[in-house]
Structure formats: structure tokens, C-alpha cells
Image 1 (cartoon, rainbow, N blue to C red):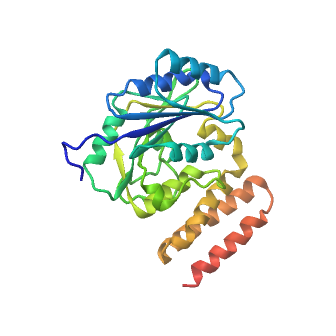
Image 2: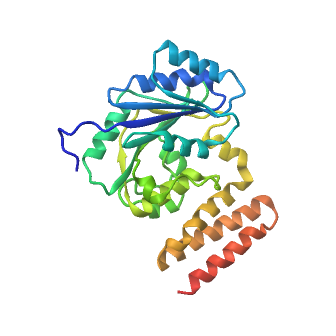
Image 3: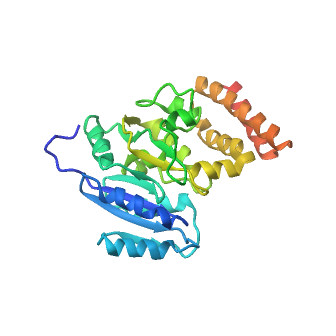
Length: 294
């Protein structure tokens, strides 16, 4: 465990923006309001087509904020930007924030305090969050329940719980950066790259949960949930591919349980698309054979 008198570790905070310059002030003010230090700020604009870059530049200058501001010449997507931010970060801890999200002044203090109460077997800490619409109107105060009404275990060894579906909000977490040396960076070949990362971490380490009712996830057109909704018919396939990637690392009992999950996702994908996906068909056969041959 960390000693009480040990200096606070540096947290690298990355704000990622794409066409959400109108909300950037909320995210930046949330960062500036923190009663925790030291903090390092990285801002990445993913080739916005609105006036985001101008807004961000003006706000950083106006508020005299020290930040590493990166403007991508082409749109790279959330996954590549998170990997870029990790490579640029200097902190012991890493946190990513969408430019349309916001949070209270004690966010990082609560997360770091939680990390000081446990040993190095805990690599990721997160909290629940509120979900609001574009105008800031409250949709739900319980993001976890919104994503996973059946959720039973929130902390500790949660790998098996995570296999049933993602419930960890990216806006509300803090990661010990050394974990990336062990589990690798975000997988840019997947559409549910965050789900895959949380599974990789949870498979080897414990996860900490922190109560915090001042974290706000804003659901806008290019937010995480909206993107999943737009992908619509491909969501089951995306979920299938993440579980398939982890299948070989499971024990026999786990394989039997996950095979049923994969089979149900396979059926749901076919039902929704009304056609056979031969790529998934091949994978479900492989999974079946690996399940019965032990």
C-alpha cells in the first residue's frame, strides 16, 4: 500500500475532442476545478470539421492552461487517440475524458484515495456516473444499472461479471499506467475496444469501485452509446468478437458459460440482420469444438 505521507502521484488527463467544441469549456473547467494535484493535461482534437480547434486554442490561452495540444491531420477514431495519449503521458495514472463530459472537483481525489487503500493488484478504479442529454437534462443517475440491470459485482475480481457485458464508463475511471506494459494498448481492430481493455485488465488484476455522484456523461450524436446505437445491427457481432478474442484464456467451465453467451450473440446477430454471417459461423464452430474437446 502507499504510505500516507507519500507524495501524490502525477495523473495524466487526456481530453479527446471531435466536433464538440461547444462543450469543451465544461470539460476544461472540470479539470481546472480539481482539488487534487499534480495533474498533466493532454488535449487531442481528432480532425474536427467545426470550429473546435479555434475554441480550444482560445480557451487554453484565456485560462493560461499548460497543455499538450495535439491536432490530428486526419480523423483517427477514439482508439488510436487513446493509444496516442498513453504514449504521450508522463503520469503514474491515466484518465481519459470526452470533451462533452464534465465532473466535480473531488473526482481525482476520490479515485487516488481509493488507490491508496489497496495494493498493486488493483490497476483500475472507476465510479458510477450520471447520464445527461445535449441540454444537460438528466437521463439517469445510475449509468451502471442503465447498461447492466443484472449487475451483481462491481469491484474486486469482476472478470466473470464483465464477460456478461460492459458496465465501466470511460469518463469515470483511473488506470495505473504500468498495466499497459502488461496487457498492451487498446486494440484498434475492435469496435468495442474499451470493453476489450477492461476484460484484459480484469482477467489479471482487481478493479476498484468508488462512490461519486458528480460525474456526468453527456449523450450526444457521436458519444459512445450513440455510436453503438448507430452500429445497431453490428453490436452483437462486436460483442461476439470481443468475447471470442478472450475465449482461449478461459478455463473449461468458463468456456462452457461463454460459449452460451457467444451462441446467443450469434443467434441475435442473425435474427437482426436476417442473413448468415459466415465469418461468425466459422468462429462459433471453432468455439464449440474448443468447448467439447478438453
